[in-house]
Structure formats: structure tokens, C-alpha cells
Image (tube, rainbow, N blue to C red; front, side, top):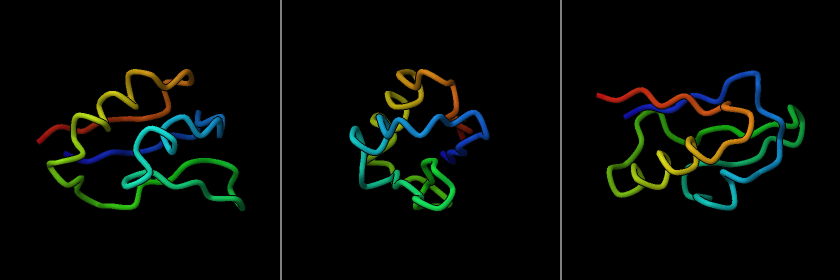
Amino acid sequence: MKVKITSQCMGDRNCNNLCPEVFEYDEDQLQSTVKFDVIPEKFEDLVRQAASECGADAIEVIEG
């Protein structure tokens, strides 16, 4: 699984709070970023949850 943060990110940091192991906040860009190219399997469910709860629909999950 891969994850991309789109330009729609509002920077509310919900994903960072839910899964700080995968998401971090870029203070310069004022939006979240992803720490991994490929998401470790143990975080996949949390990443899916973060994507579904993202108010801006800014988290794009690429399965496979």
C-alpha cells in the first residue's frame, strides 16, 4: 500500500494524531506528509481509517 497527501490538505492534523508513525506535519508547507514510500503492513488499517476520516478527502490510498 502507498499513500499520497493531495493539495486538498487543510492541515488540520487529524491524520497526524491518528497515526503519527506514518503521518507528520510539515510546518513550512502547512500540510501533512507521509513518512514512508510503502506503508508498513501493521499501519495499513490506521492509514485507511485516516483516509476515510479526512474532512478534505486529501489522503489518497493506493492499494497493492
